[in-house]
Length: 320
Length: 188
Image (cartoon, rainbow over all chains, first blue to last red; front, side):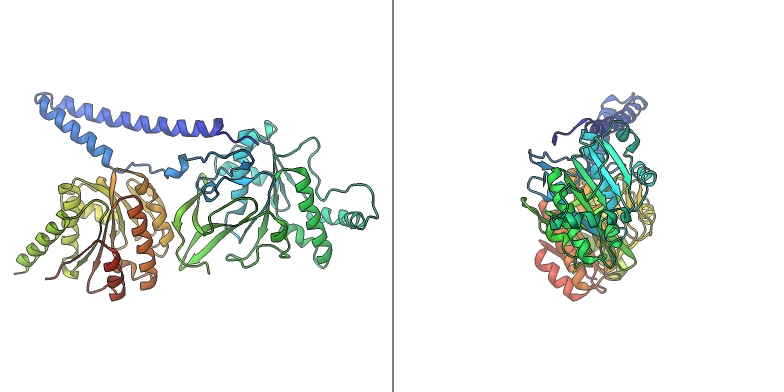
């Protein structure tokens, strides 16, 4: 995995710097105009301009950007970042490469956005990313990315991103073969998931384990065996994986059968908390094997540019 | 008579604010009747006399209304970055960030993030604790203000929290009196 901040981030930062310079330029023009008007009193006008410049500096910027948006943590080798402002600061280093991580949360908690944002970040860095959806179709997901300013078509064209929709019931057809393999009755390898040909991903998102589980209704034992095989498959593949699971808004268990959270290397929980007549978003790293992380629920916002996490901002009530 | 009482309170406020040191957290209790006048005088002391700018959280009046009153009092509203919890809008407009409701304390906290990062913002002004009481229980207000004060101290900001002493729960005043560096009680 490559860890350096690449072109898209640099471009974003330099665009913001340009914007700032432009607005500073406008301010100095204003001051110049005032100087011209009071040219009869050059000393007074220079003092006035000086005061005006000081005031401008003190005043709040008209467009307030969260300082977090410009910060990108440097991630050491062997770890990956999500690229989500503020979120990577919850870790000492980052998410260990090759970890399988559950992304758990209720409806509207931002699970899909969280995963798409991470993939957009990695694909822009040059990593090969694969999004396997059992729910929304490719076009909808691409449109969703576009809403946040992530150009999915460009990344797909470059061969860095693949989005594929699959039917969860197709998986159950393979299960008999997987069970036979588990018992040693079948000698050939059967993969629990079909990846695109000639595409070895560095990062995989599976959306969602809940959809897969629904295809196993009444066959809970088969589902458990399938899930074990799936985690082993990702381990063998060596890629970092995010597996989405749908839970309650403030969950007590983080997956369908409860087994997934033991098998997974990490669990990230996204909350959508109701407080009076408003809802607040929050995030927590519940577990991450091989990495120290903050053990607290922190505030998060879904903005027009994607998710921003506020590692220092406490969440007031609602999560017990 | 009333005028001389106002003058006395303003003088007391001026004296108290003069003695405030960088990073101090101040709880100010106003009498109900003089709230608007004293509030504007407070802002005048900060913006004009101390030449500071900062963040202003309003739970009592909409942004547009405060701007109007500030203009009437010859105060530059552009020296403040507002968090409006009253207008029931969301998003940013000019120097104001709108929060859907004062019920969302987390979002009020988030709206202050740019001010913590901005060195030009010397203070955070919370108007007011009794306004928050309409939406939250005293325990929650104490939890929120404690967290706010911790952040202000971390970033070495002045903190000014105002409240009407008639309308503020005694538990809030007692608790904050312990944490704040100064308590200014203005009585007629």
